[in-house]
Image (tube, rainbow, N blue to C red; front, side):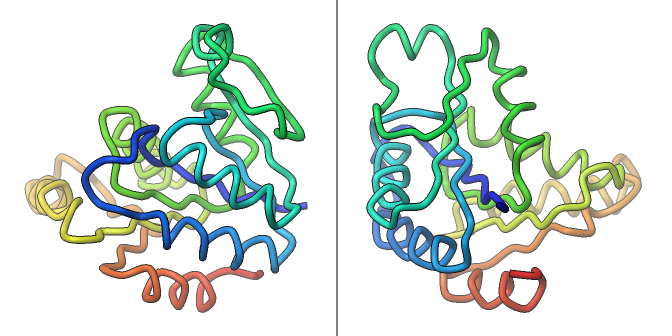
Amino acid sequence: MKNVCVFLSSKNVGIDVSRELSLLAEFFSSKGYGLVYGGGNRGNMGVVSREFSDKEAKISGYSLQMFHKKGFTPDYIDHLEIADTFSDRKQRMIDNSDIFIIFPGGLGTIDELIDVINLDGLEILGKGIYLLNKDGFWTELLAWMNKALEMEYIPLAPPNLHVSESFEEMLQQITRNEQL
């Protein structure tokens, strides 16, 4: 079974992506994909996991001890791993995923994004990375990355990074680039 990893905020603030999360679950579950995510039951993490659960897709959650102790882990997760550190959690998610979808998010999301595009730019990852730049959320980061490329701080643009301005465009990119 293949897995889609979704990096997103644990909060439902800023840009509303609830429609996109529902469509994402429908799209990937219909292709036999399971969900890999941060293991939470709140905010957008809760929304995406419930959407995949409603579609009867396998859900793998990678949470942290401190969140699990507070009851932030849903009981419908098929496979749950509790990590001690954010770095360990992130690495487990990366190792158990075949494709990455990044929604607008906060510091945790940008940390996860930077790791996967760095691994891809070093030609280590080799998996599709799809960044939803809804409402221009990631535009400044992308501008910085282009400047760093021009100034040769980054030797190679991440070859598997695909940026889309809309969710529909993202689905078209995924369909064109991935063996679903």
